[in-house]
Image (tube, rainbow, N blue to C red; front, top):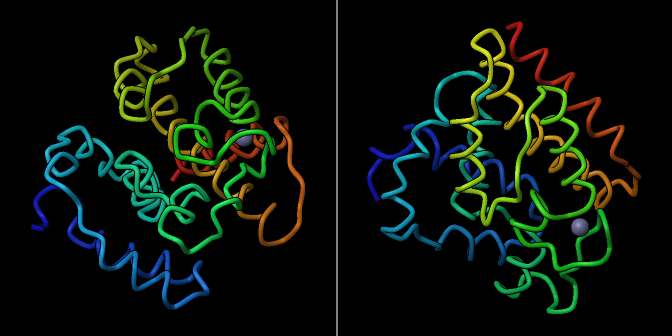
Length: 194
Ligand SMILES: [Zn+2]
């Protein structure tokens, strides 16, 4: 695995990121042993992540989302870090929490995306996967003056979904569409102003 296809510090940052969130050493070891297959490394579109538009930790997280390496419950249960039946999405408590569900099709996430899209006067259809989602997002015909906010919005939405999801799991908090939308816009404004 070379460092040509993603930010040079991505692997080490990645391990820090996930170490801080995984309390079982065995799980960390499993994750560290995983390698990225050629299909993922050939995803040239991931280069579009590393543009410095959002904080590095958010870029890194987006990269994990797009290459399907986020530690969703589904993934952790398949890696036998969580129990097989502990894979339900905590945001809707209805579907298995895999990447596509958590970040796109979950009813909460879906409404957050819709709010963002409609605020820019755009329309969209459900993407088949996160890769297509990011691709179509990048090519959406948004006004030039809104371009940066639009792209940053992709990052802020997935970031807030992940933060809120973690707060529900680890801090027993609750969240909702309005909360997520508001915070996604707050992040986007902060990052665009930096
Ligand atoms: Zn859900």
